Length: 125
Image (cartoon, rainbow, N blue to C red; front, side, top):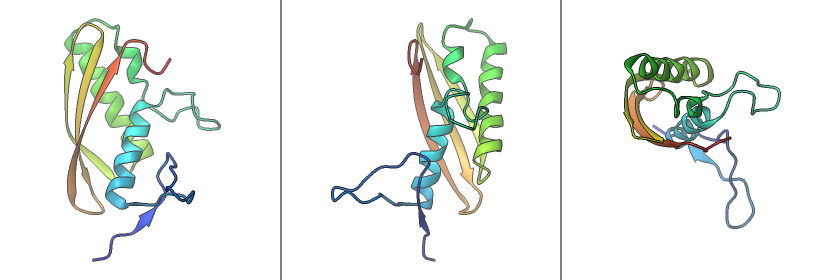
């Protein structure tokens, strides 16, 4: 099966100045990262786009906050990247950092992917 190419949410350029195209898996991966690292209200004309994960860095380290983080991720991806279904989320909290690992299934390709993000206090302000 031929894999389709397209443009990611975050555009990059080739060495020759052209617009970089990506495969479906790379495009979806890029979109998931962009959604999770974008602060709500940051995108022009899309005030609800994003996930606001940085807001949780200085919150208490308890199960309630952890569940809020997980639900924020699930909700954001369900709205903004409908080709994925979250299969699992793990969270490791340090003093001023949250490490988040998200496992998701790309429903259109029947493949699973994993991303890990580290969000530190002061990031994305």
